[in-house]
Length: 423
Image 1 (cartoon, rainbow, N blue to C red):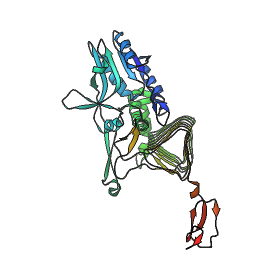
Image 2 (tube, rainbow, N blue to C red):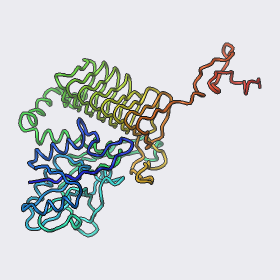
Image 3 (cartoon, rainbow, N blue to C red):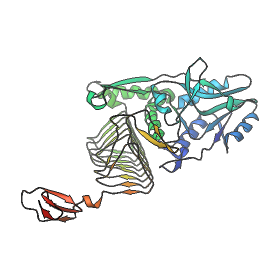
Image 4 (spheres, rainbow, N blue to C red):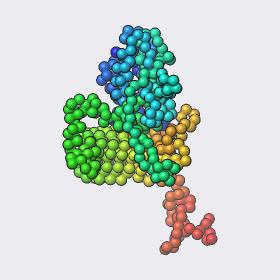
């Protein structure tokens, strides 16, 4: 059976690439989805637009799938939709759908998913442009095909004085679906894919790579105390270089990776040729091919594209584009203490449904030491953000021992001196 792949030419700012070229774990979304479509037994045919795809689908006696190449979904969602759609009889027009939940609601913001009535009265479901068409029906009248869905909801405590409540909720699932059209989606889809990877390995890894692998790693965690069990669940390539003092748990380390002394890698994906320097912490993040995490830096819930450098003391919820740099002592704000963060989207500011988000750097963009960037902001491709030279001391005035000094117009002068005169 065929799948008609419709190209979405819209570029994601500031990454300056269409969604199919956005990074997902260790390759682009386009490469990931095409691999999954082929492994599911579908033949890929490219279409210029949805109207052309509809005409081609109607020519197929058994029907055809129509998919925008901006859609990212987990393997289980793809295969469940294929199986369920093919079982339909007669003329069919259905769209892939997931029920409302913590995780799907989170992915829906900034038009990541479309709300649709899902059969039962007032029952809303989330859909993305992934259809099955047979006969003379149209995708404009597609009905939601709601797939089975389960998620594990995690509650973790927060300091009550931070945001006015003492608990946050986060959900993980083997199922995710998103129409990627903003850099926020790049960050969220990668976080969802980190969890789905482990479910997929158990479900599709067959005996050697699935069940037996988990049993082997479970035994490696004996005596299963003091965090040994979760430390046992990790996949480290024999062709990587990992220092013996590094701590790795629930993470994937591909070939050619170098991890320095006392580094901590937790719940992350480290792609080929990446370097994690001494003392760095990488938690719940995706590090692209050849990317570098600086010495003693902390990268949390972020996506670092191939060739990028993450050297901040702490970076959370951010996306670093290809070959971009966030240098030591620069800072990305990652929280709004009073309301949800809003991002620029199609000429307006849109609520992302959360008070947590960092910054996105375009390709080749650089943020130097001492620069602070507000949460939800985008640094254009190739931009260089530097600290105001007037705040950097390149001249030292006449300062007596023990006397306090400040920087004024690039010169260090006594604190009690103003405009060149004593107070």
